[in-house]
Length: 287
Image (cartoon, rainbow, N blue to C red; front, side, top):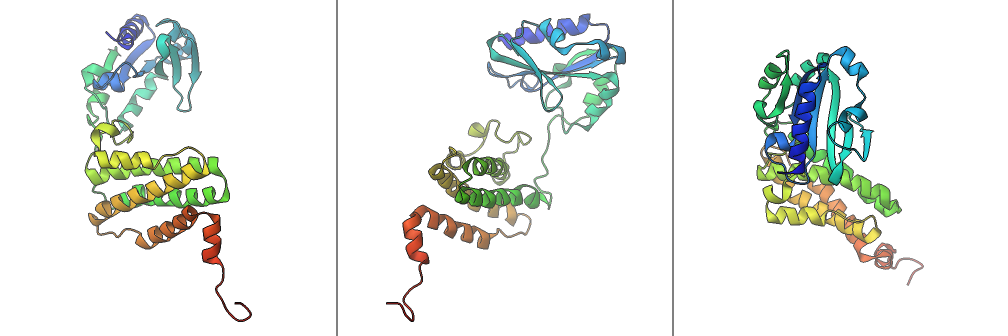
């Protein structure tokens, strides 16, 4: 048994023993049956108003197992670090927030694997009303604008930042382009199972050629590394875009790709070669 499974059992016990807790659910890898020894444990806990006001997230999680640290992340979840670097994400909410679960894009798991506690019976029907899996809008006409256009926007920005010498900023912009490349790869290959986290399982779910090209589109934050990653991202984007666009009667931005290709080529030649190519040729007064 994985240590995370022991922790999940302990979470269930603490939830069942907490009178001010109306409902609790588990989500993520363990609920979906896809977890391994590196997976997080993730929960939503719905307390009565008075119960939520009284609960201390650090103390509550410490009742599960000793913590080395705890913090509130940018999404409002309390992240607890258990022994062995196991991460636990706990959303401490009220019963009034159960209705908000209906706005989730999908459950991602079977209801019985998710439900830990449902004293009032309010949580089960909300979960049952959600689709089991998220189906991305792959055939929606706006898919190119939503997932392909941002790729080239970030890519051109990254090129200019790298050329200016803002290597860390270029590296950051390239990260945005890479995420959209992952979505483009999944669209082109019809592999949309992990759409909401497109990097998840990419090595198993995408073709070996695409995985190799995605790796080539990553880099360290150095001038040579960024140049190589920009080239790799451009080549992969050029290959994927037409496959996606053709389905919707759209054309790939070939003129823009060609211009970026030329600009990258000049930078790849080095500053001395670029200067010679851009220097005016013989003319009046020259020779």
